[in-house]
Length: 375
Image: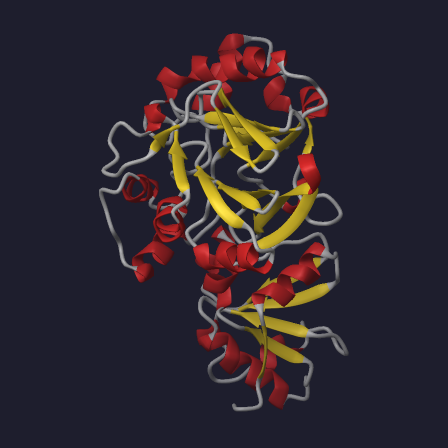
């Protein structure tokens, strides 16, 4: 199998974001496939568990496109490599296995520039396409801040180093429940100051700088202003950058709004969520560009793969911002919600510093789609 061809998740990501027609054979077990898979506007994907192919691939050959590339994926790349070799032996030379499988897909971050900042700086959105997480780097005058950091800090370090940016600040908009934050680790490595909303940090076991309403954080010539916006968590805090961009954390998404139940306090936080969305944000200018910490589906992406929209447009089109009846709003955000994120309790405990799982356990805790939004 030495000549079996592989493709990286970065290459697959670029094909998905570019809208290329791609065909994927997913050889994981069907329950895993049904829960979470590669999606894209021009992605065609079929599922056939590898154990069903171990004795031969004849039964699926008629389902594969002739003359087009076939990309085979599994959990970690091992079964996919074997299946790809079997398919190539049937004359489909243009068959590739996805290196690292869905585990690697879950961990890839794709940086996309979303706009300019004061003094020639820039704002970059890091799209974690395999999980729907969005994080950000603010860059101005050679200084930087990372917002809502994922745990794969090496990818941020590589980006910062490539642009000679000195990391000064790390900010979490709230205590995350769907992914492990890399902010504390990156802070320890670089000396950057770690900011966290104090109402979300009452049980943490480490030092941090409180992120409070009205605080201003300077990055080069850019100003990041904190706006207390509870509802997803009691400490949720939004960020306004250079009076142009509104980073909403998990309070407001493009097609939905944040769920208030991930700490088990849905009934307590419904009123806070409504106050934030229907009063606090209403006081802001419609021209602010909303940049959330997650997206739910490929349909929320712009042509270049970025995820954003103006606040005024969201007040026109986002159903979660147009529920006039308070009781209907309460039911929408506290009943009939999608399943909670995998291992959300352990992820919260890890982000508090109360657990220190090894890398394998961290990966296991994060596998699967994000579920931070009200559908």
